[in-house]
Amino acid sequence: MTTRLSRSGIPGLEPGAAIRCEPVPDHEDWRFVGQTLNSGPMPAIIYFSLTAEQSLELDPYNQFVTFLNAGEQSKFRVFSVTLPFHTSDMKECETAFSKWANIYNSGGDLVSGFVRKVSSALNSFIGDGYISPNKIFVAGLSRGALLAAHIAVSNPNIQACLGFSPVTVLHDLNEFSDAEIHSERARLKIRRASLHNDTVISGLMRIPVRFYMGNSDTRVGTRNAFEAVHLVAERAAEEGVRSPPHEFVMYCSVGKNGHGTPPDVFRAGAEYILSLID
Image (cartoon, rainbow, N blue to C red; front, side, top):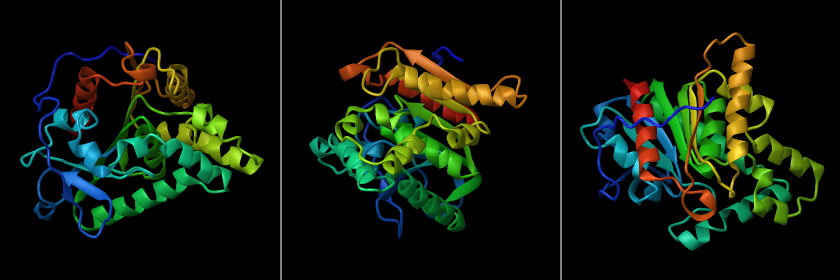
């Protein structure tokens, strides 16, 4: 199903506004913004984009966070962790997917390993009193959205999943076709990392999902993202849900290969998550 972007606006910082994140004690690679961790459990938004610092501090990747107005007085915290093979060097980040493909080609399973790492951290955050167990939301940009969806499937505490320009089918990416995946076992693991499989579809069916996508994204595939949402909504309808809360929002593509996300889309996504928190 397709919805239109909300233009009602929310109070928040403007793109480019300075945000400073803080480390999470005893959790390497994790950062957060919001009230101090010793002020008790709060609703949490887990956001994946690049490195933890870039996701929370670097414009335009942190625009979702700025529109959330996730300051020291906010009633929630935003956490982030560094994605696999990402560093502060943006040029090096551009090769991350090639490294993902190499991991699978060598028999590994990068997505499952990352999901286990994040799920373990979330359980620790709940135990440490940093986040409210019944108020956790995941969001991600591009490959971060793919990972956010898998984390939502694996963790019953997740209440909703939001994706901006989401990667949904790994084996359609140039890096994976160029890698010439050599074994059927590797190809199976890559298909399982896609969002077009029964485990993911069934897992996402239980929660609200919204994906924002450019109408001509040739980098990761507009149709792939639509199909992912449609499959989830279709499965929910088959289970008797009269109005499945699974939405696909399409906008005019921007950026290289149509894979950009404009500020009004980040703002609309922030508004959506805030409406679920209230």
